Amino acid sequence: MPDWGFWENQGCGLAVAGFGGQPHFVVLAVDNPAGQNAALHRLLHPLTDLHMAPEMGVWRLLERDSGTLAVHAALLRTGDVLFFAGSSNDPDRHNAHRYGTTVWHYPGEEVEQPDTPVDLFCVGHAFLPDGRLLAAGGTGQYDPFFGLRQSIAFDPDTLSWTAQPDMAGGRWYPSLLALGDGLVLAVAGLDETGMLNTVPEVYTGGAGWTTRPASAHWPMYGHLFLLADGRVFYSGGQYGSNNGVRPGVWDLASNEVTDVPGLPGAGLRNQSASVLLPPAQDQRVMIVGGGPWDMHDHSGATASAAIADLSAATPRYTPAADLHMARMHLCATLLPDRTVLVNGGSMMEEHADAAALGAEIFDPVSGAWTMAAESRVPRLYHSVALLMPDGKVVTAGSNPARKTEEMRIEVFWPPYLFAGPRPLVVVTTPEVHYGDTLEAGVPDAADIASASLIRPGATTHSSELEQRLVDLPVTVTGEDTVEVRLPASANLAPPGWYLLTVVNHAGVPSPAVWVRLS
Image 1 (cartoon, rainbow, N blue to C red):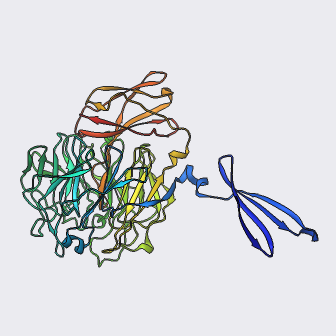
Image 2: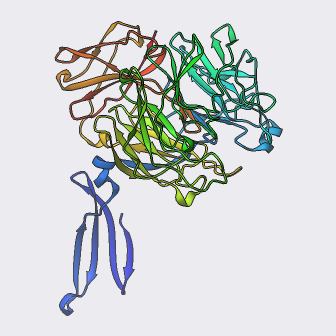
Image 3: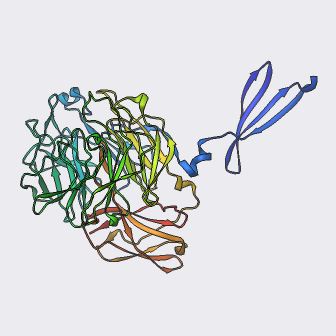
């Protein structure tokens, strides 16, 4: 039934109808044209954000919330979203041992809140080859902050945290990086005395942690990337100060670091974002945005971006196109069409009135940024973004001041979801192996332009060290079948669970299927 309203003592009825796949308003009114009573009707075509969706995508604010402040977020191999925050930047919760974890059974309404036995506020995390999420460090004390030696793993099958062996030293704001041999590297963070931990450690499943020789003074939550030759690249992005350390390639075997010069605004990369640009075979890392690390520096965020080609004999940064909007505390998410979504952040520290609500999409081929749709919620410090298997992006969190916690969730539909029918991909087994070929069912196989493996995200503090998109060469073998060649190198794609997608010639990706690479 339509809703009825009145104006100027005349009756009017309004109803919503859909014609041609678009919303319309039907207006029935009593008017008095030319002095005679008459019934009029109008069919109005309102402009909505769906009109711009093929160019800019759309954001939608969900009715449900995150349940736990999304300081940390990870996409589990079950398709669930893991939000956790430990004491959530709240000393009262820390002292009362009240810690939070929420598992959201995306895309439905159901959530579960497993027990959180320890304070996971500001840990580092990385996926293990079996799909569990390893978290290490955490908050031992507030003001000043001391790091914890603990490590703990979340099992997506049992939805539970399980204690792992302690590290040799505490870590608060550390970086954890999955390596090609299935081990996990832990770097930096504040130790149990509040000092910078300069002793890296490596986690081996079933055996615990092993210390390595002292290294450079890597900054807290330093943005690290595993390269195809097994070395590790520090992009120049981090939380806080860079400790005087410049971008460089770190050889774990020799413990030597080779500088990568040319990063513009190196002192403005606090809470920047860094990504290994797709495909990973190109070995190009982009750093974008960020701001000053000194809270008394009111110069604001930067819009600058730069790219380093790590496959070059002597790599260096070269400037890339600037963002349309300067921002720090931003998130950068790899999309299956091989573009990069940047969302959130602010042009000035924790100022919501300076929030950058408009998202932007970077095309690594053209080198250009395109403005995307505006979100509704400012996403500042302690906000996250994750690519989902259906090709959408979930964003949550924001904690500009203690006990100011943003619990609303927004979901972004990228433009490719409005560009036509989606292809499909089907595999008979989730177990795949390095160097093999995998046969997949793909209706209308001749229309497939590319295939890829995307490592699921695990993110915090604008730092996302897990995500990478690896190209899979495609051979059409039948009307509805293709073969894809899996990577031969574990350094290019560390062992674990991945999202397998295909993209058609219109640039539309399939919903992803999960495979385990070993």
